[in-house]
Length: 459
Length: 177
Image (cartoon, rainbow over all chains, first blue to last red; front, side, top):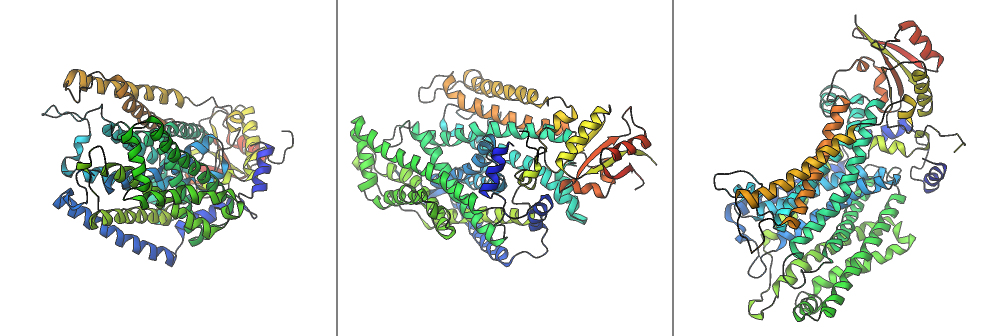
């Protein structure tokens, strides 16, 4: 780290107060080691478990009864299941962006939030994967997704974007898991060295006997760098492939080349919203305001402003191209979005994704924590509506007015969606309870004294 | 009583880099420098060569890409050619995505499992764990370890040497601690 970036870190107060290596270890490792779990944790966990029960019940009934319990109809064959799938995958993207892309750009401020964001990615992708899994109807043959040799000579159609999507999301999940676990190894060693009894054995098992020698760090750092390097194109590819599910079809409103970058920007936008929501709650509950600082929230708000503007640009460009193409079906599809029977969905999206982030031009709002909390939730509502607009509004009126229909979700659409929050939050809360929510090793790298040339002025 | 080596504690990353240079300068080869986080410049101080892991990852990535492309080509051109919405059997542009995804997947396996292979982990027993105090290395301590296997190893000399370069809490690691 050069003198300039050290000065920058001091000036930006990424780690305020008199912190040293010991205090960082104690503060972060102290959370999973704590004897008393905060009462807020129990309340949230109880709430998450009850949502999880709703999830298990609804999915159980879906498997028993079939997808007829959903509100999907002809022509809206894709309803909430695909909306929720795209929404959850999108949320996951911020985690990879923070851990991989910001690592490559040497943005050290990410060290306070990357573990957090990576875990969010894992659970968000699990929630996303639920939907393609359960929407197939006959869930017991879901393994037909895989290219497995079988006596029927039956193979997936590798020329279809839906199978690309399957490969992309599974690769994404696996690589995110490996990245997350690799980052966790030195921290598990820290927990192992501080724990006793059974806990020591469990943490020790997963720490793989890490002993922090530079002969280990050498390979470790390269592996981490390569994982960051390959995750970067991977994360950009995943939502691009998700968008191909739509863009390779011939439906007006879907058949556009702007979809891949537009989906990726939206994914990052919503993901940062979710990281913001979760980190505001966690820093409050665990008093970690000196590690996840207002500076971090400010920077996240800036990224939300950037990606929100990109999404807003895509919305207006879609309209322009629909008009400029001269294609009456394309033009109708967009007029119908803004002025059709689902106009409220479109304008909810515009409000949350285009209007709300404009407040982040002002430093006052980027540092106002209650404001950030509310906007971060609005961002995710807005991004849900974006997928609603794309899926439902596009499908419900296509070429022939005789084939038009309205779409109404049923209670089971709602309960499965609500239920995935139970899956997400119960997993996330268990993570907060048992694992360090901030990377202990990487948080120390932000301290000026972690640099061996600290105090020398020869640079 | 079997002896495995000697460890010495240093207080700062700076002192550890200095110690690494000295240990290396003295001609030791079987030594390691332990720290709670990777230290910039330590590879040079210890005289380590660049990690070979990158080559392994490259080979794995290439394998993944060839496997992905080969699998798709084999399925649609050889194993069961089937006309689906008039798409060509050998639709190579459509194979790009899965080829890429499998390249990334195999590279990631190469990176993580290759890292474990080069680091010889999982390994749950190691002589450095015989020391009680060594466990601080995952929090705020910096240690140098020199192994018995080192050709220049001589217990008394090594202890004196480590003391001279500023090491504290010097311990001889043996299985009877």
